[in-house]
Every structure is written in structure tokens, then in C-alpha cells.
Amino acid sequence: MQEGWIEAEGEGDALVLRAGGQWCIADAAALDRKLGRLSLPPSRRARIDLAAIEALDTAGAWLVLRLQRALAARGTEVRIENLSRDLEPLLRQVEKRGVPAPPPPLQPPRSLVADGVGSIGATTLELLGTTAGHLGFFGLVVVTLARTLVQPGRVRIVSLVAQMSRVGVAALPIVGLLSFLVGVVMAYQGADQLRRFSAEILTVNLVGLGFLRELGVLLAAVIIAGRSGSAFTAEIGAMVVNEEIDALRTLALDPIELLVLPRLVALVLTLPLVTFYANVMGLFGGAVLCWLVLGLPLPIFVQQLHDALTMWSFWLGIIKAPFFATAIALVGCQEGLSVHRSAESVGRHTTRAVVQSIFLVIVIDAAFSILFAALQI
Image 1: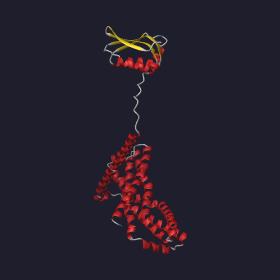
Image 2: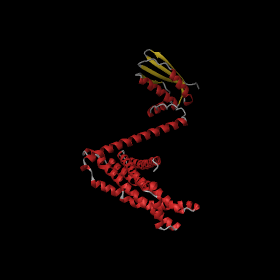
Image 3: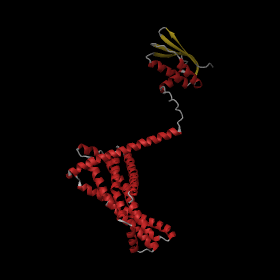
Image 4: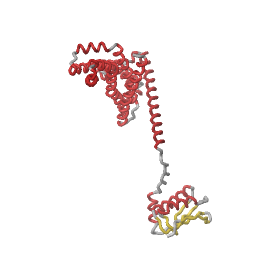
């Protein structure tokens, strides 16, 4: 059989395209190049004469129909003629299913280095956007808080007390249990190592300084972030999904003043108290372990603790608590207000709130450690 071919010629005011040979998938690439090289002058009518076609498959029919569509798009009246009866059903079947779009061009192979740099850039931009969002929300809350302080009658005492009970009192059992257990573990590990130097008494110093300066406030903040920060996001997010936030704005009520401020102030007031409770439970756990394992009576434990600690040892941990509370409350409430109207969005933003809150707690704690080291405290 002859290789597929096509030629164009004028016939009066009409354009005649004659095709012949094999119009099959094996010659499709060559035929496509020939069609691309055709010089087709503008005309009002055109005929595609397929009398010389010897073989046709779906690829060849697709090329014929694509040529017809291209001419029709130029405003030319096109007819397909003289196709044999054996091949005409195939052409009609392909025409009925439609002419598919040409496949997209092959993309050049991507570089692993370029992909890595692009990923780093996208992550950096996302981090900068998140930081800008947090700073903007913080400014909005500060302005709302200042307006509320100027008009004390706008403070919602009932809501504030209810939130203090939920984020503070209700968290005491889990905070106390975990702090006690961490105190036991810390004392046991410290005593095991200090026994090699016959310095078991310094276990009291280790537990006291570790809990009062770092562990107590960190444990309390992380537990509150996982417990109350996620609750803030879920509660406010559910209100967004149910369109309750829109209803508040319709009633000229500020969601920041009504929902965010009570949660923020409640957490700032209660986290220092929860931290103090965590410190006490951690020291109690260390004292129990020292009594059971080292045979150290409670009066001696208290005396050694008194000699090892200063007032700054106590206040360094408490000072951090309001800053941790501010970060947890702001992130939790902002993520809740950022929820879209779907249950999946509530879960995603709740997870983001917990992760970002704990991350910010660690960052703020590191910043305080650098500051205290610089001040030699």
C-alpha cells in the first residue's frame, strides 16, 4: 500500500484537498507534518476528497476530522467526499465521539535541585504569610482590648469567669498528674546518675531548678495548648460553619470582643496559676521518689530545696506564663476564625492551631532563655 499523502489545489472559488494512501496510526506523525506544511489559501468552500484512501483507522480519521474543524473555524464551508463505504462508518463513529484535544506537549524533565529550591521558597512564603497574619490579628485584638478598657461596661464578666473555669480549673487534674509523674521520672534519672559521684542529695537541686525554671511552665503550656487551644479553634470554627459569626456581625456585635477577648484574658490570668500548681506537683513527685529510693525525709528535702533556690528561680517560670498564654489564645482563636464552611476545614485548622501554639511556646521559651542568660539571671 502507498504511504499516506495529501495535496491542495484550487477549483474555481473552492479549495479541493485530495488525500490518499494509508491513513493509519503508523503514518500519523508523518501525515501530521504534511498537514502542517499545507498552504491553504482562504476560500468560502472546501472539499476533502478521500477517494484515493486505501486504509483508514481511528488515528487517520481523527486527522481528517481535525482538518475539517480547522477549516470550519476559518469560516469555510467544508464537505468530506468519496470515502469508500467500508471506511465511512469508522469516520462517522470517530466524528460522533468528538475530536479529542491534542495531547499536551511533553514537559522537560524537572531538576531535583529546582524542585527543592521551589519547595523551600513556597514554605518560606507560607511561613511569612502566617507570621503576617498572626501579627495583624494581634494588632486587631490589642485595639479591641484598648477600646474595651476605655469602656469597662463592655467587659463580659460572666463569659470571662466561665472561660477561666474551663481553661484553668478543669485542666488541673491532667496537669497535676503529668507534672507529678515527670517529677518522679526526673528525680529517678537524676539520682541514678548522681549516685556514681555520691551526690544523690543534688537530685533535689536538679528537680527544683528544672521544674521551677523550665519544666513546670512548659508542661502546663503544652497541655493547655493541646487541650484549650484546640478547643478555642473547634468552638469558633463550628460557629463559622454554622454562620453564627455572620449572625453576630449582622447584629453589630464584634466577634473579637465577644469571643476572643474572654478566652485571651482568661488564659492569661489562669496559666500562671496552673504553672504554680504544676511546679508544686512536680516537686511533690520528686520528693516522693527521693523518700522511697534515697531514703531522704521530707524535711531534709525541703531544707535542701530552700538552700538551692532563690526567689528568681520561682519567678523566672511564672514570668513566661502570660506570654505563652497570649500565644496559645491568639493562635487558637485566629485559626478558628479562619475556618471555611466545612467540617474538614475545622479539623485542619484545629491541628494547625495545636502545632503552631506548641511551636510558638518553644520559640518564646528559647528567647527567654537567651534573655536570662544575657542578664545573668
